[in-house]
Image 1 (spheres, rainbow, N blue to C red):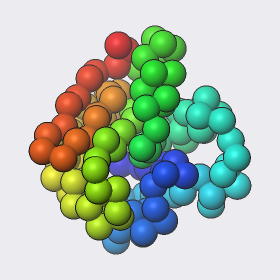
Image 2: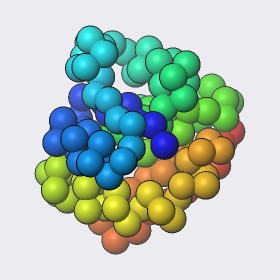
Image 3: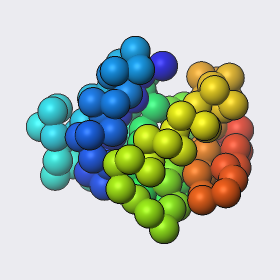
Image 4: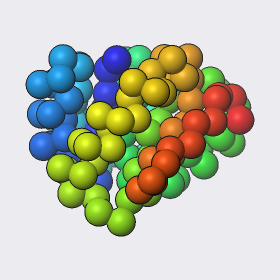
Length: 120
């Protein structure tokens, strides 16, 4: 899986994903730190990347678009430190890998995660 981390996601998480063998990049590394959510979704779609974000707007934009890709993982956590996000990703990715590769919005909360297949 390939990931594109939004501004609310730490570079530490990108580094951790790379250590786990994933292809991950941060919007800063693509000089997109001022890009709109729509531009970020477009870049993710073009590069077949899954967006990692803490911003609910990504799910809303994707739902309204009627498209089936890119997938988005939205973190809705009380503790949004990189360590906690990485811990939740370690749990969520194996369980959601199939849906993410086919197109989904995955909302990650403290004690659970929800998967909505695209298009919504």
